[in-house]
Amino acid sequence: MLTAEEKSSVTALFGKVNVDVVGAEALGRLLVVYPWTQRFFEHFGDLSTADAVMGNPQVKAHGKKVLESFSEGLKHLDDLKGAFAKLSELHCDKLHVDPENFRLLGNVLVVVLARRFGGEFTPELQASFQKVVTGVANALAHRYH
Amino acid sequence: MSLTRAERTIIVSMWSKISTQTDAIGTETLERLFSCYPQAKTYFPHFDLHTGSAQLRAHGSKVVAAVGDAVKSIDNVASALSKLSELHAYVLRVDPVNFKFLSHCLLVTLASHFPADFTADAHAAWDKFLSIVSSVLTEKYR
Figure 1 (spheres, rainbow over the protein chains, first blue to last red):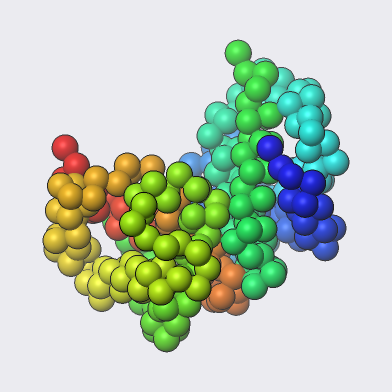
Figure 2: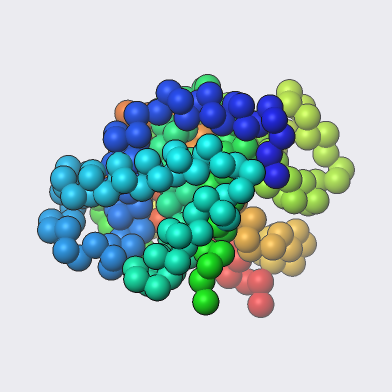
């Protein structure tokens, strides 16, 4: 899937990412850009405006959790399905999340990385990240039944 | 799906900045498209798609100019892009999935060039607007 070079460039860039901040921004933007995704977070309180979402402490906390998990996954690029097996079962059996949401979040994350890294987020680096987010989304969907 | 007044304002105001860099934005968007979604290259067997290619730059410019036409007629995108809609339906016949790929790459390019302007609201407005443009371009497919 990824060459050694791609793995190393992805890891290098992600090493500079503040997981708290980027996680919060990615999840927040998912909820703002694709408001139907709010269906999973009705218990999060005020999601009525973009400002409310982006400032919501539960969104921030959950965004951080999600990106920490993604970060962990980056250490297992050779076996994403194994690494995300348990989480896949959780998202299917307990959370009932349509895997399409993983694809949406992956693309939002790519946009957030582009915004934060600017020119450093080259087309080649984006291509590598697109493979990673697709791999993670597929791994999270793998145990669905 | 249609744009709110607030969304239209965001798009039109960002466009005034984007329009000063249409070549760069267009070229980069296509470079991202072909890097991330190499299958999109199948529509351009007659092009030199290497970085720096004059054809890539010219085509990127054309694509961004068309988006600009849609922005200028933001209240009636269907009429502004009517000819392009026919072209895509009857001549080019680009599979509709590619409009999602291209839109995503344009969003990434905008985010990278305009980090401060590309707020969550702007991101939402642009995603929605490009989705409308894509719909218009595919509405005559069948």
